[in-house]
Length: 411
Ligand SMILES: Nc1ncnc2c1ncn2[C@@H]1O[C@H](COP(=O)(O)OP(=O)(O)O)[C@@H](O)[C@H]1O
Ligand SMILES: [Mg+2]
Image (cartoon, rainbow, N blue to C red; front, side):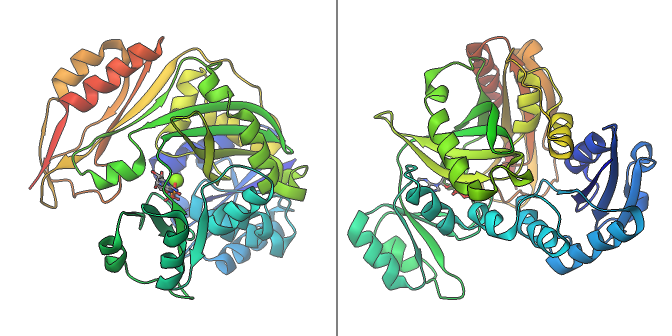
């Protein structure tokens, strides 16, 4: 029986969806590494967990390696090491390399985690990407700007969640930027003016077997730059729209480049989350790729649109190399509620009843921000809602009803 070890930092709502998915999978032995104690595993799932090992920090590769090694000694050979968090991908790869576990190695994981290397690998294989450089000093940024012009975008070499990401429009912006160094370099890229899409791809041993895609409204960067904007993710009803299908060849080429020689191995069995830009002239550019399930509720959205449980499907894919492609039946979307104005806590939440009434049957789930809740720092805000509809237009109507009615204020 395949022995899967899942890394669950804490047993929180979203992580527990993954834990449940593995726990409910028949024909596997299932173990868990976590920072939370074993007692925190939701009781109905605990009985299915063969081995548990607690560490202080799951992101520390040596602790993780020790934990997985201990589970292997007490329960048996570990066949798969899985975890959903972006920051876990490299430490897990280090543990795999140290313990001889099949799957993403450090060499391949770095293609996904290091933004500079990712772009180099894609460019070398002819995949369209923005011009970029890794700046180790301010003069590197200046030289890059001389070549491509303003605006440019700067971001951490191994970023996530649009943290530390800035649009640099002019010399003033440039002067205000904390200078990069050899120790802390900065990824600098030509600014791509475009719509921002995602492409979620299931590959089995490197072969794409299923795709889904979403559009971000507006782009994560614009959301961060514009404090009053509420953010939406839209998964359209149409799965044969050329906007999306036209990208498939680039998606396949990009994944082949990033997985490289490991494509045909267990490393190439994955659900990947690719972000890509579609320019006005119809040309597409790959922005970045995560070798992990997507965030911003795209997992539940894919489940709703394809009438399946994508968490369960992912667990089965990872553990057993199996996936049954599902046809699309609905459009689905998520809206994120973000506060307005200065202040550090939510002071008022208005318009919820009206939003719910206007959404009608499209509303699937809603988490309204609570008065007193601390201000969130990312673009996902303090609350969210998930909607589903037979048509893309109906879904857009529901998303609009949410973000135009719900008003969150800070104080
Ligand atoms: N070259 C670029 N041109 C335009 N916008 C960009 C570019 N790179 C990043 N962005 C914006 O910044 C956001 C975050 O950058 P990204 O590369 O996705 O890093 P991460 O999501 O890991 O923080 C993107 O979603 C996009 O809105
Ligand atoms: Mg991103």
